[in-house]
Every structure is written in C-alpha cells, then in structure tokens.
Length: 112
Length: 117
Image 1 (cartoon, rainbow over the protein chains, first blue to last red):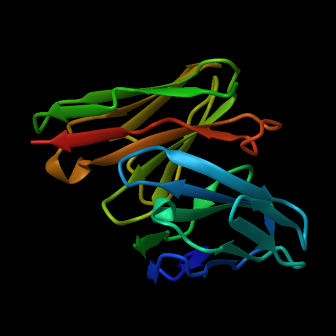
Image 2 (spheres, rainbow over the protein chains, first blue to last red):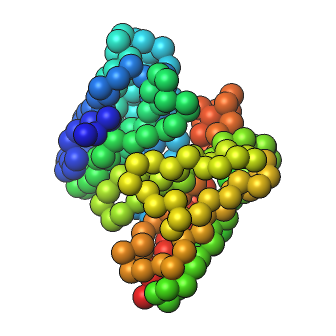
C-alpha cells in the first residue's frame, strides 16, 4: 500500500488557470516536502512544511500542511508553461528515522 | 552550500557487467545518504539508506546482493549494480541528509541514467 497518496497523477491546464495538487499520508508527518522535476533530471526543492497549519508561498506557488499534519496541498496560481513538469511530494513520517519517501507524482502540462 | 555530486550522469553497460555510481557531498559531511530508483513516468522509490561506517538498510523487495551500497566516508556513498540486466535500466538518484540546510535537510544529486544492453 502507498504510504503517501498524491493526486491527481496527471493534470493538463490552460495557461493562466489555477490548479491544486494534493498529498495525503496515512501517518502523521514529521515534515512534508514539495519538489519539481523533469524526468531524468534532478529534483528542484520548492518548499518544506513542518508545523501543523503551516503555509508557505514562493512566487505563484503556495503549499499548505493541515493541522493534523497528514495532508498537504500545492496550489499554483495563474499557471504558466514554465510550471510544467513533475511535482513530487515527499515526506518524513514520525518514527521513520529520517527516510524521505515520495508520493506517486503529478505530471503537469500547461497549454499556451 | 549543500551540493551533492553524482557521477556518472549516464552509463551504458553490457548485460552481466557491474556498474558503480558515486554520490559525493561536496561541502558538508553526510552521515546518511539515500538511494532512489525512478522508472519512466513513475515516482522515486527508496531503495536503501546508507549510513557512514555501517551496513546499509534496504527497503523491502530490494536485493542487497545485487545493489551493493558502501558509505566508507562522510562525503561518499557508492551504489554498485552487480550483474546488471536490462530490467535494471532506470534512473538512479541519491540524496544526502544534512539537517538545517535551506532545502530542509535533503540535497539530491542530479541522477544517473543507467541503460543495460
């Protein structure tokens, strides 16, 4: 079973539209990480969330972690073609000795 | 700061041969490193946790005799794919853990694309 569920698995949006990617854990999280990747390349760190209810923003990307620290969302406002790629949520779970595991990933396409 | 260098970036090898991938932390000491594998259109799957000076801890389903991990120093971990077969072709990526850095403590290498022919 997947410890970290990410949805949707793929997303196609028109440029300028907003979108949300969700990440849900079956266990309480010590930390939740969002990365962007192009397949076959390294990961680009976006944000890390550790506190329940925490919200962080960078440019047009906002990430939130719920109070229970089991669910996170990544929201992109006014999407652009440069936002296209694979978005990965990663998490360290309480008691997991620092292992960072990943959800299934979301492939985002932004149509001009 | 917090740079991880992974080498080689691409390698093609013949079936039955072994391939070594290196992961180096350039400007910090990494007591713990992680190795992941990624198939096309899939996410990163954790293979093993590499701890300096001790045996690696492998995830369920990962053959430790096939994927040899050595973490002999605080800046270098290696993954050796032994007797490689075409099904081992994949993208392998390492991560070094260093709490306190801006990236939240996990710095990733740029990955190695392995093709076994």
